[in-house]
Length: 140
Image 1 (cartoon, rainbow, N blue to C red):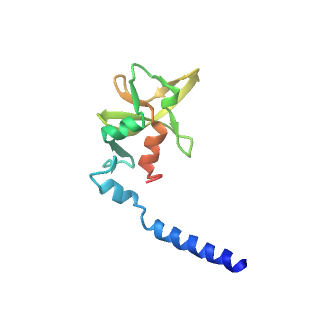
Image 2: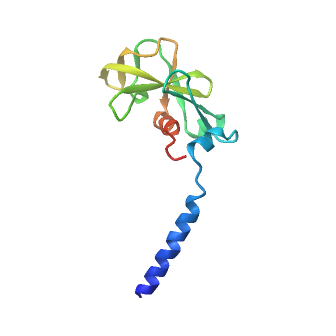
Image 3: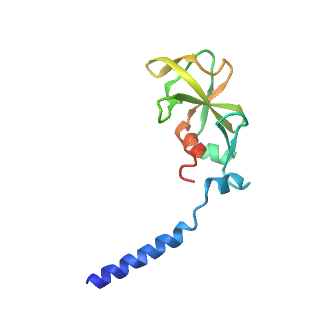
């Protein structure tokens, strides 16, 4: 019985090692023109622009609103591991860039910002976590 368990473990280990060679690195995905997302560094910053295909944006259910003043839907605010608040702006169709914001206070489902994107800026309200994962290369 012990021999059978060892054989099964060896088979599973071999299969896992073989499959691990199928994964793509974030750089390979970013360089591939047929992928649903492209991540590019923004010169002079440590930020990146995430560009999606229309199909990818639809699949992720990306939704945006236009900032009319320093109030945004709270669901648009993303906190990083250091507690810094961000929103994703949409400077061009299907292109999303993370922008640092300062939340003054939260009232219900709205965040009042003391610093953030200027009025007229489109920001992402739905799909924020997915964009952050794409930007960081999680799950790619």
